[in-house]
Image (tube, rainbow over all chains, first blue to last red):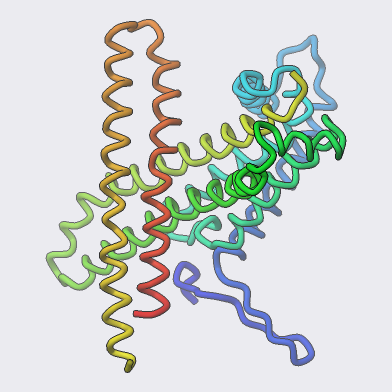
Length: 234
Length: 79
């Protein structure tokens, strides 16, 4: 069974037919593996002694946390420790799942459902934070801000944010995987001369998978923290 | 209105939709040019300028990606 070409997993329970597509299965595996990693590393952090030299895993994750806290403090001010779990998890999991195109598995973000769920997560987080800061009445007043007849435009702008975030991620990763699939199909069509194609595929992988994956993960986190910072107290 | 007509028109529409790549390319090139100019003017701030430029470039690509998503939907659903 060739795992990289599997389209979906189909099974039925009591007559109900389920069909889970391959990117969603990869997403579930990534989530389970990272849950285990984060729980293990968290235990090591709790048992670590601040006065002694840190061990290897504690040191790596400590440096990573410092970097992410620095990036977030530009947008969130003093709330960066509170929102560190959300944004740190999103950037680490997203970078790893975008890099899965290197191995030959379909990246989880190439399915539209995964991206829309992440966009919905941001939408809920921003709205709840806005209501907590201003109260419900203040929030509605904030929507009527410059002129009250601009209310539909303001509402549309609020809805446009998660849609544009998720579609940007979806389009980048999906188009990268489609172009790589087409190039590999061309190489197999050419028969013997297709071996020469292996001279250029590493560079395409570097651009589409590594560069695009890192940049899109960074942009996703930065935009989310920026729009969240707009809703915090000044 | 047979199915060949619909198929042909869908593929033609997918091709026309990709004209939006023009705007994405122009916008990104403009941003990169301004970024290079800023680094030339102030070489010490190169790291910050690079981060801001990459963020701006990834944002300017968004509308080109919207048209790509529409073209892919047309090709795979109606073509």
